Length: 327
Ligand SMILES: Cc1cc2nc3c(=O)[nH]c(=O)nc-3n(C[C@H](O)[C@H](O)[C@H](O)COP(=O)(O)OP(=O)(O)OC[C@H]3O[C@@H](n4cnc5c(N)ncnc54)[C@H](O)[C@@H]3O)c2cc1C
Figure 1 (tube, rainbow, N blue to C red):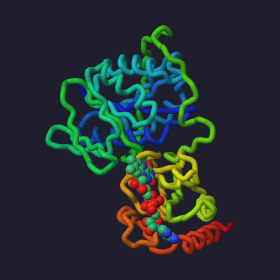
Figure 2: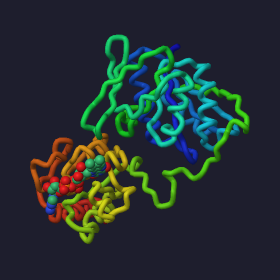
Figure 3: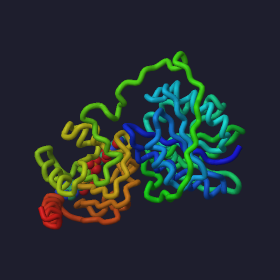
Figure 4: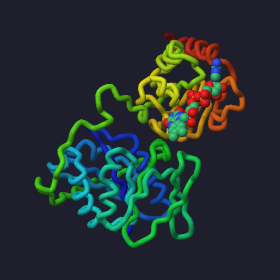
């Protein structure tokens, strides 16, 4: 056994950002262990996606291609990856922690007599082995995990835990692997993916998010923050009470029971910073918090804090942004 294998995910001809974050995690594991790094994509007709993969710092890249992998199915992915992993024989298999991965990766790991270590937020080297960190009880506790046993170590990486920007560029060739699949083995049929249902918002790929909390007081005041989001060219998000009240749809909720986001800029407006909210946005690159309570926990994770009344600050900020953009 040798090497670190990262399984990348794509849809509609594009990689998702979490795949690059998983690759960043893979690069860290490879660098710390001195093991070669490879990445794999699955599907049919993977020419243009292969080109993008060839530009990353990898020892080797692979495309597992078959007409029966055109649409995602758990059966197809498990069978194809099982054959490929047996051939490659890696020590680590790293996935982004997406809905699709949650669907098939535990079964794939079980084929090797292993479990999937899901939603990893950090890792460190300890002697010859690795310690992987994942959160418990809605982020209140960090738990350390070590892989035991002789098979590959399967793990998935939480959105925002590793930075796609830290990915190193390089040049590699992409080798094709043709799995043995037949139609009888694929028992399910692909339907429209959950994330792509009409009107859903994918906050996880938004570069700028303006998030609003109970400090906004009532639904009628929401246009104040909507205007700021619009001026910044960002998405509007919210803490749970705002969505529970039905002031904004559930798909805009950030936190342990909402979406996990990692934008370049996260602006928290009138949000106290409860742990269940923080676990969903702590991967943001820059956090700006506006809160009238200087002791609000959100300031502990904020890069920039503005202590004051949002009803004064937000409209002034919107005006300043519009002016700066010449709008
Ligand atoms: C199982 C479970 C899951 C949960 N999941 C989530 C989740 O996914 N996402 C989530 O967000 N929460 C979640 N919660 C709820 C969480 O515990 C908090 O209750 C929630 O995040 C608080 O939302 P908030 O910060 O908007 O409201 P509050 O805690 O009420 O904070 C409002 C803030 O606004 C400030 N403020 C008030 N007026 C102004 C003003 N005029 N100007 C500026 N600041 C002002 C206040 O100082 C205060 O800090 C969950 C809870 C549980 C138990």
